[in-house]
Length: 306
Image 1 (tube, rainbow, N blue to C red):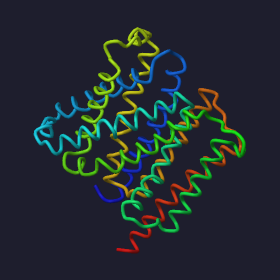
Image 2 (cartoon, rainbow, N blue to C red):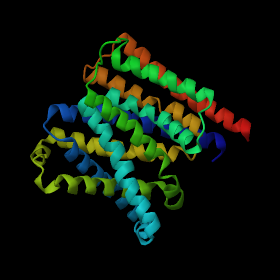
Image 3 (tube, rainbow, N blue to C red):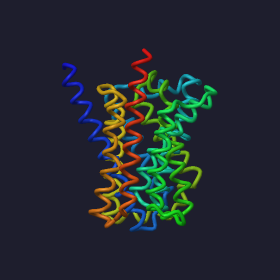
């Protein structure tokens, strides 16, 4: 397969993955608002079943999925990723949806590049470049418009929604940075599969999965079907997103991932009758534009340095 075909394959994968992940947000919002199901229970079911599904697929392909458990160093990193990376980003994302809506939770993932830049600047003990400062200010301006619709006196979301949303950005930055060496050593699917299973089991044990009162809700065919769709679409989105990075550049990945909030917004407007005010829409455009520009400018400067 030539480079053009590889690139086309990567573009299709990232667009499909971003749209599938964007679609799961409104689906989870509908489940949470239509039932008394808890965030913890839904996430436990989702992560455990998705993890088992991925690991089962790998076992069927004769991949030695337990080899990673024989090395204490990699095992510790895997458990850390499963709890603070996989579970962290999933829990804050769903909690942000529960406290606000899918569109806001999805967009607040775009704060992750800001946290990553601040972390790198702090660890290297130097101020970020001017273009990064401009990108951060522009992204925060877009976030301000999204949260306030341009009003200086009030927020359109609750304090808990805002805190969970900031948590999404923080945990997503950790999820992005931490598992690189793990995935290079063991492969994307093994790390994601075990990460999901570990995160789901820890959450279930911590909340007492044997005491959950939500099991009765799963007897409703519509709810069960929706949860199956959420698990399938979400898992497939992870695989497509991470797999696309083999075929296209990080800049293209960043740009095309903007399909994620746009998909969540479109579905929310059509299905959930969710609406945004004019300045909120300007804020959405502002956030997506500045995050995309940060990726492009960062890649350009890296090439110049090389």
